[in-house]
Image 1 (tube, rainbow, N blue to C red):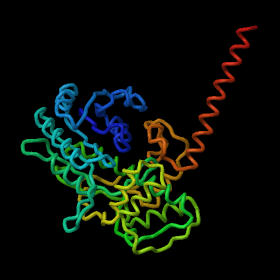
Image 2: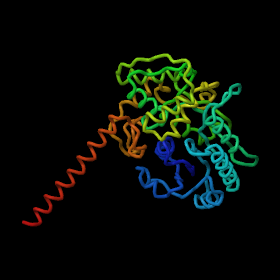
Image 3: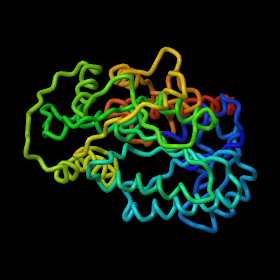
Image 4: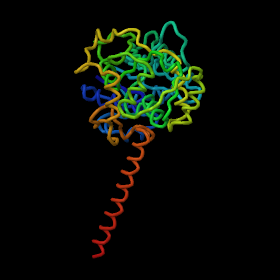
Length: 357
Protein backbone atom coordinates (compact mmCIF):
# COMPACT_ATOMS: atom_id res chain seq x y z
CA UNK A 1 0.00 0.00 0.00
CA UNK A 2 1.00 3.64 -0.43
CA UNK A 3 1.13 5.23 3.01
CA UNK A 4 1.61 8.86 4.06
CA UNK A 5 2.87 9.44 7.62
CA UNK A 6 2.13 12.88 9.08
CA UNK A 7 4.19 13.40 12.20
CA UNK A 8 7.02 11.21 10.88
CA UNK A 9 9.65 12.89 13.06
CA UNK A 10 7.75 12.32 16.31
CA UNK A 11 8.23 9.53 18.82
CA UNK A 12 5.52 7.24 17.46
CA UNK A 13 5.87 8.23 13.81
CA UNK A 14 9.61 7.59 13.69
CA UNK A 15 9.11 4.09 15.13
CA UNK A 16 6.05 3.33 13.01
CA UNK A 17 7.85 3.87 9.70
CA UNK A 18 10.27 0.89 10.08
CA UNK A 19 7.27 -1.31 10.92
CA UNK A 20 5.39 -0.13 7.84
CA UNK A 21 8.44 -0.77 5.66
CA UNK A 22 8.82 -4.25 7.16
CA UNK A 23 5.16 -4.88 6.28
CA UNK A 24 5.95 -4.11 2.63
CA UNK A 25 4.29 -0.72 2.33
CA UNK A 26 5.65 2.19 0.32
CA UNK A 27 6.04 5.09 2.74
CA UNK A 28 5.91 8.84 2.19
CA UNK A 29 7.26 10.69 5.24
CA UNK A 30 6.09 14.26 5.77
CA UNK A 31 7.48 17.12 7.83
CA UNK A 32 7.26 20.91 7.95
CA UNK A 33 11.06 20.90 7.75
CA UNK A 34 12.18 18.60 4.94
CA UNK A 35 15.80 18.54 6.13
CA UNK A 36 14.74 17.15 9.52
CA UNK A 37 13.87 13.82 7.90
CA UNK A 38 17.50 13.23 6.89
CA UNK A 39 18.40 12.48 10.53
CA UNK A 40 16.47 9.23 10.60
CA UNK A 41 17.96 5.85 9.74
CA UNK A 42 15.05 5.07 7.43
CA UNK A 43 15.47 8.27 5.35
CA UNK A 44 16.85 6.47 2.30
CA UNK A 45 13.95 3.99 2.30
CA UNK A 46 11.08 6.52 2.14
CA UNK A 47 9.99 9.39 -0.06
CA UNK A 48 10.15 12.68 1.81
CA UNK A 49 7.81 15.64 1.27
CA UNK A 50 7.28 19.01 2.90
CA UNK A 51 3.88 19.22 4.57
CA UNK A 52 2.48 21.73 7.06
CA UNK A 53 -0.93 20.55 8.28
CA UNK A 54 -1.77 24.01 9.65
CA UNK A 55 -1.48 25.59 6.18
CA UNK A 56 -4.27 24.62 3.72
CA UNK A 57 -2.12 25.47 0.70
CA UNK A 58 0.76 23.34 2.02
CA UNK A 59 -1.68 20.48 2.59
CA UNK A 60 -2.94 20.65 -0.99
CA UNK A 61 0.60 20.84 -2.37
CA UNK A 62 1.73 18.02 -0.10
CA UNK A 63 -1.01 15.65 -1.18
CA UNK A 64 -0.32 16.47 -4.83
CA UNK A 65 3.37 15.71 -4.33
CA UNK A 66 2.63 12.49 -2.42
CA UNK A 67 0.59 11.14 -5.33
CA UNK A 68 -1.91 8.32 -4.91
CA UNK A 69 -2.17 7.50 -1.23
CA UNK A 70 -4.14 4.62 0.28
CA UNK A 71 -3.68 5.43 3.97
CA UNK A 72 -2.76 8.58 5.90
CA UNK A 73 -1.41 8.27 9.43
CA UNK A 74 -2.30 11.32 11.44
CA UNK A 75 0.21 11.64 14.31
CA UNK A 76 0.35 15.44 14.50
CA UNK A 77 -0.19 17.35 17.73
CA UNK A 78 0.85 20.69 19.18
CA UNK A 79 0.57 20.01 22.91
CA UNK A 80 2.81 22.37 24.86
CA UNK A 81 2.44 25.13 22.28
CA UNK A 82 0.35 28.26 22.78
CA UNK A 83 -3.24 27.83 21.52
CA UNK A 84 -2.48 24.21 20.61
CA UNK A 85 -6.15 23.25 20.79
CA UNK A 86 -7.26 25.62 18.03
CA UNK A 87 -4.18 24.85 15.94
CA UNK A 88 -4.69 21.09 16.20
CA UNK A 89 -8.37 21.25 15.29
CA UNK A 90 -7.70 23.43 12.24
CA UNK A 91 -4.85 21.17 11.11
CA UNK A 92 -7.09 18.10 11.31
CA UNK A 93 -9.78 19.86 9.28
CA UNK A 94 -7.21 20.78 6.62
CA UNK A 95 -5.91 17.22 6.34
CA UNK A 96 -9.38 15.66 6.27
CA UNK A 97 -10.45 17.96 3.42
CA UNK A 98 -7.22 17.41 1.52
CA UNK A 99 -7.45 13.63 1.89
CA UNK A 100 -11.08 13.66 0.72
CA UNK A 101 -10.21 15.72 -2.35
CA UNK A 102 -7.38 13.30 -3.27
CA UNK A 103 -9.51 10.18 -2.82
CA UNK A 104 -7.56 8.76 0.12
CA UNK A 105 -9.22 5.60 1.40
CA UNK A 106 -8.36 5.69 5.09
CA UNK A 107 -7.01 7.88 7.87
CA UNK A 108 -5.48 6.22 10.93
CA UNK A 109 -5.33 8.48 13.98
CA UNK A 110 -3.76 7.89 17.38
CA UNK A 111 -5.49 9.86 20.12
CA UNK A 112 -6.32 9.52 23.82
CA UNK A 113 -9.11 7.76 25.68
CA UNK A 114 -12.35 9.75 25.70
CA UNK A 115 -14.65 8.63 28.55
CA UNK A 116 -18.32 9.35 27.77
CA UNK A 117 -19.23 10.39 31.30
CA UNK A 118 -16.21 12.36 32.46
CA UNK A 119 -14.91 15.88 32.22
CA UNK A 120 -11.67 16.04 30.23
CA UNK A 121 -8.49 18.07 30.44
CA UNK A 122 -7.81 20.53 27.65
CA UNK A 123 -5.25 18.10 26.21
CA UNK A 124 -7.75 15.24 26.11
CA UNK A 125 -10.52 17.50 24.81
CA UNK A 126 -8.19 18.53 22.01
CA UNK A 127 -7.43 14.90 21.10
CA UNK A 128 -11.17 14.21 20.92
CA UNK A 129 -11.78 17.29 18.76
CA UNK A 130 -9.08 16.19 16.33
CA UNK A 131 -10.70 12.77 15.96
CA UNK A 132 -14.07 14.36 15.17
CA UNK A 133 -12.48 16.82 12.71
CA UNK A 134 -10.84 13.98 10.77
CA UNK A 135 -14.17 12.21 10.26
CA UNK A 136 -15.95 14.27 7.59
CA UNK A 137 -18.79 13.52 5.20
CA UNK A 138 -17.49 12.05 1.96
CA UNK A 139 -14.02 11.77 3.43
CA UNK A 140 -11.79 8.75 4.06
CA UNK A 141 -12.72 6.01 6.49
CA UNK A 142 -11.36 6.80 9.93
CA UNK A 143 -9.70 4.30 12.26
CA UNK A 144 -9.23 6.09 15.58
CA UNK A 145 -6.98 4.27 18.02
CA UNK A 146 -7.18 5.60 21.57
CA UNK A 147 -4.37 5.17 24.09
CA UNK A 148 -3.16 6.54 27.40
CA UNK A 149 0.55 6.71 28.29
CA UNK A 150 2.87 5.04 25.78
CA UNK A 151 5.73 3.28 27.58
CA UNK A 152 9.16 3.45 25.97
CA UNK A 153 12.44 5.28 26.38
CA UNK A 154 12.06 8.64 24.65
CA UNK A 155 8.29 8.84 25.14
CA UNK A 156 7.57 12.16 26.86
CA UNK A 157 5.19 10.63 29.40
CA UNK A 158 7.66 7.88 30.30
CA UNK A 159 10.53 10.37 30.55
CA UNK A 160 8.44 12.44 32.96
CA UNK A 161 8.14 9.41 35.23
CA UNK A 162 11.85 8.70 34.86
CA UNK A 163 13.07 12.19 35.76
CA UNK A 164 10.72 12.72 38.68
CA UNK A 165 11.62 9.29 40.11
CA UNK A 166 15.35 9.77 39.58
CA UNK A 167 15.55 13.30 40.94
CA UNK A 168 13.27 13.10 43.97
CA UNK A 169 14.31 11.06 47.01
CA UNK A 170 10.88 11.73 48.49
CA UNK A 171 8.07 11.40 45.96
CA UNK A 172 4.79 13.23 46.63
CA UNK A 173 1.72 11.10 45.98
CA UNK A 174 -1.42 13.21 45.46
CA UNK A 175 -4.67 11.25 45.49
CA UNK A 176 -5.07 11.68 41.74
CA UNK A 177 -2.02 9.48 41.01
CA UNK A 178 -4.26 6.54 41.88
CA UNK A 179 -6.68 7.39 39.07
CA UNK A 180 -7.15 4.41 36.74
CA UNK A 181 -4.78 4.53 33.79
CA UNK A 182 -4.19 1.77 31.24
CA UNK A 183 -0.89 2.42 29.44
CA UNK A 184 0.48 0.55 26.44
CA UNK A 185 3.99 -0.37 25.38
CA UNK A 186 5.34 1.37 22.30
CA UNK A 187 5.81 -2.05 20.68
CA UNK A 188 2.13 -2.88 21.02
CA UNK A 189 1.00 0.62 19.99
CA UNK A 190 3.03 0.40 16.77
CA UNK A 191 1.74 -3.15 16.21
CA UNK A 192 -1.88 -1.97 16.32
CA UNK A 193 -1.15 1.10 14.20
CA UNK A 194 0.44 -1.06 11.51
CA UNK A 195 -2.54 -3.43 11.51
CA UNK A 196 -4.94 -0.48 11.22
CA UNK A 197 -3.74 0.23 7.68
CA UNK A 198 -5.52 -2.90 6.45
CA UNK A 199 -9.19 -3.64 6.01
CA UNK A 200 -9.09 -6.31 8.71
CA UNK A 201 -9.68 -3.37 11.08
CA UNK A 202 -13.08 -1.88 10.18
CA UNK A 203 -13.55 1.90 10.41
CA UNK A 204 -14.33 3.05 13.93
CA UNK A 205 -12.70 3.85 17.25
CA UNK A 206 -10.78 1.36 19.37
CA UNK A 207 -9.15 1.54 22.78
CA UNK A 208 -5.68 -0.01 22.91
CA UNK A 209 -3.87 -0.90 26.12
CA UNK A 210 -1.41 -3.27 27.75
CA UNK A 211 -2.05 -6.79 29.03
CA UNK A 212 -2.93 -5.50 32.50
CA UNK A 213 -4.66 -2.50 34.03
CA UNK A 214 -3.10 0.02 36.35
CA UNK A 215 -2.78 3.58 37.52
CA UNK A 216 -0.25 6.39 37.36
CA UNK A 217 1.21 5.31 40.70
CA UNK A 218 1.50 1.70 39.46
CA UNK A 219 3.58 2.93 36.52
CA UNK A 220 5.74 4.99 38.87
CA UNK A 221 6.45 2.05 41.18
CA UNK A 222 7.03 -0.29 38.23
CA UNK A 223 9.80 2.08 37.18
CA UNK A 224 11.28 2.21 40.70
CA UNK A 225 11.31 -1.60 40.85
CA UNK A 226 13.01 -1.78 37.46
CA UNK A 227 15.84 0.56 38.46
CA UNK A 228 16.05 -0.97 41.97
CA UNK A 229 16.05 2.47 43.59
CA UNK A 230 14.57 2.95 47.08
CA UNK A 231 12.28 5.94 47.33
CA UNK A 232 9.91 7.26 49.96
CA UNK A 233 6.38 8.05 48.86
CA UNK A 234 4.45 10.63 50.84
CA UNK A 235 0.68 10.88 50.45
CA UNK A 236 -0.30 14.51 49.80
CA UNK A 237 -4.03 14.54 49.09
CA UNK A 238 -4.44 18.28 48.69
CA UNK A 239 -1.91 18.92 45.89
CA UNK A 240 -3.61 20.73 43.00
CA UNK A 241 -2.85 19.20 39.61
CA UNK A 242 -2.17 22.63 38.08
CA UNK A 243 0.43 23.40 40.75
CA UNK A 244 1.97 19.95 40.24
CA UNK A 245 2.17 20.63 36.51
CA UNK A 246 3.95 23.94 37.08
CA UNK A 247 6.44 22.43 39.55
CA UNK A 248 7.09 19.43 37.33
CA UNK A 249 7.89 21.77 34.46
CA UNK A 250 10.63 23.28 36.65
CA UNK A 251 12.03 19.96 37.89
CA UNK A 252 12.53 18.13 34.61
CA UNK A 253 14.44 19.09 31.43
CA UNK A 254 11.36 18.41 29.29
CA UNK A 255 9.95 21.63 27.74
CA UNK A 256 7.95 23.23 30.55
CA UNK A 257 4.74 23.83 28.57
CA UNK A 258 4.66 20.21 27.43
CA UNK A 259 5.40 18.85 30.91
CA UNK A 260 2.76 21.04 32.50
CA UNK A 261 0.03 20.09 30.01
CA UNK A 262 0.75 16.38 30.45
CA UNK A 263 0.69 16.51 34.26
CA UNK A 264 -2.65 18.33 34.21
CA UNK A 265 -4.12 15.36 32.36
CA UNK A 266 -3.37 13.12 35.36
CA UNK A 267 -6.44 14.46 37.15
CA UNK A 268 -8.65 12.40 34.83
CA UNK A 269 -9.12 8.61 34.55
CA UNK A 270 -7.51 7.15 31.43
CA UNK A 271 -8.94 3.66 31.40
CA UNK A 272 -9.76 1.50 28.38
CA UNK A 273 -13.51 1.02 28.17
CA UNK A 274 -13.53 -1.70 25.51
CA UNK A 275 -11.16 -4.14 23.81
CA UNK A 276 -12.82 -4.85 20.45
CA UNK A 277 -9.54 -4.26 18.58
CA UNK A 278 -8.59 -7.77 19.73
CA UNK A 279 -11.60 -9.17 17.84
CA UNK A 280 -10.00 -8.00 14.60
CA UNK A 281 -6.25 -8.12 15.29
CA UNK A 282 -4.57 -11.13 16.93
CA UNK A 283 -2.27 -10.36 19.84
CA UNK A 284 1.38 -9.84 18.86
CA UNK A 285 3.67 -12.89 19.05
CA UNK A 286 4.16 -13.72 22.70
CA UNK A 287 1.13 -11.66 23.70
CA UNK A 288 0.63 -8.07 24.76
CA UNK A 289 3.22 -6.78 27.21
CA UNK A 290 2.40 -6.01 30.82
CA UNK A 291 3.27 -2.61 32.27
CA UNK A 292 6.17 -4.13 34.18
CA UNK A 293 7.59 -5.85 31.09
CA UNK A 294 7.37 -2.66 29.03
CA UNK A 295 9.06 -0.59 31.75
CA UNK A 296 11.86 -3.13 32.18
CA UNK A 297 12.55 -3.11 28.43
CA UNK A 298 12.59 0.68 28.39
CA UNK A 299 14.98 0.93 31.34
CA UNK A 300 17.34 -1.57 29.66
CA UNK A 301 18.11 0.87 26.83
CA UNK A 302 21.75 1.42 25.96
CA UNK A 303 23.23 4.41 24.17
CA UNK A 304 20.97 5.77 21.41
CA UNK A 305 21.04 4.11 17.99
CA UNK A 306 19.31 4.84 14.68
CA UNK A 307 15.59 4.24 15.14
CA UNK A 308 15.46 1.53 12.46
CA UNK A 309 18.34 -0.39 14.09
CA UNK A 310 17.15 -0.55 17.66
CA UNK A 311 17.58 -4.00 19.25
CA UNK A 312 14.31 -3.27 21.04
CA UNK A 313 11.75 -0.66 19.97
CA UNK A 314 11.51 0.41 23.63
CA UNK A 315 15.12 1.61 23.55
CA UNK A 316 16.33 5.15 22.99
CA UNK A 317 16.90 6.32 19.40
CA UNK A 318 19.48 8.89 18.34
CA UNK A 319 16.65 11.03 16.95
CA UNK A 320 14.73 11.18 20.24
CA UNK A 321 15.01 14.51 22.09
CA UNK A 322 18.37 15.30 23.64
CA UNK A 323 16.82 15.39 27.10
CA UNK A 324 15.45 11.84 26.81
CA UNK A 325 17.02 8.95 28.69
CA UNK A 326 17.50 10.47 32.13
CA UNK A 327 20.45 12.14 33.81
CA UNK A 328 22.72 9.07 33.69
CA UNK A 329 22.14 8.68 29.95
CA UNK A 330 22.97 12.35 29.41
CA UNK A 331 26.31 11.79 31.18
CA UNK A 332 27.00 8.69 29.07
CA UNK A 333 26.25 10.66 25.91
CA UNK A 334 28.60 13.44 26.97
CA UNK A 335 31.41 10.96 27.71
CA UNK A 336 30.86 9.24 24.37
CA UNK A 337 30.80 12.49 22.42
CA UNK A 338 33.99 13.72 24.09
CA UNK A 339 35.70 10.40 23.44
CA UNK A 340 34.75 10.58 19.77
CA UNK A 341 35.99 14.16 19.60
CA UNK A 342 39.27 13.23 21.26
CA UNK A 343 39.74 10.29 18.92
CA UNK A 344 39.24 12.62 15.97
CA UNK A 345 41.88 15.01 17.29
CA UNK A 346 44.37 12.16 17.83
CA UNK A 347 43.70 10.79 14.34
CA UNK A 348 44.28 14.25 12.90
CA UNK A 349 47.59 14.62 14.73
CA UNK A 350 48.78 11.20 13.59
CA UNK A 351 47.88 12.02 10.02
CA UNK A 352 49.73 15.35 10.24
CA UNK A 353 52.85 13.68 11.67
CA UNK A 354 52.86 11.06 8.92
CA UNK A 355 52.46 13.73 6.30
CA UNK A 356 55.40 15.66 7.69
CA UNK A 357 57.66 12.64 7.63
